[in-house]
Length: 238
Image (cartoon, rainbow, N blue to C red; front, side, top):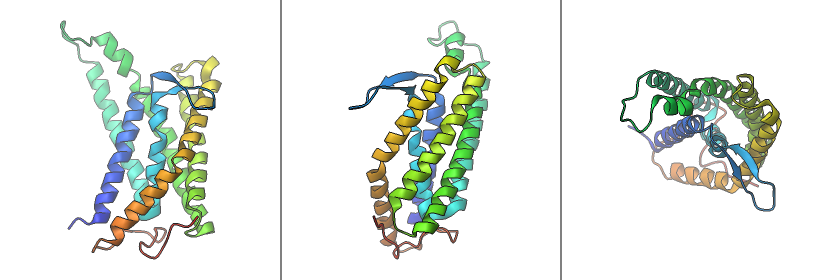
């Protein structure tokens, strides 16, 4: 029988994979994003939604522990590999004479996805493992208190690692211009950091909502490691 815990885990894992694939597909478009009382951020549209993946990872780590969080990351990366090979195959197919998207347009939009996905896989895998480990390490120090600290600190560090790796990788393959790489890294990371801090209330709401559902479930929580929290006995404490 599928429990409420299983359903939540599957939903979060699927959402993680969707956001990760989406970010990789749309990364080539760069926009200037105005922010109230601050500078305008020039960054990839993929970077706008990408920080959400770390929020999801932290939710999984909080309720299901290290092993299931790592499985979620690996599963999403495998999906990226499958999609990358599918796009490479599609790129080699010849468009019809009446196709509104010809070979050149398709290649311009998706032709470099295979390079981007390699950089993304390296950056995502390394940074997500750092996020999971750092999150759990902070929780061993604070117990169930200071939820916002372990969430924000772990994401802030891992996002910096991710931003640095993926942008340097794309610059190495001349996808991103060298004279803009510093600005891109700065804008991308600063936006992700502010976005993460602003999403702290969302993280708290998600934790409380998931706990509320699991506490009212007649089935036990699907926790498979000692690092995962005990639902019903722990509370979110500021």
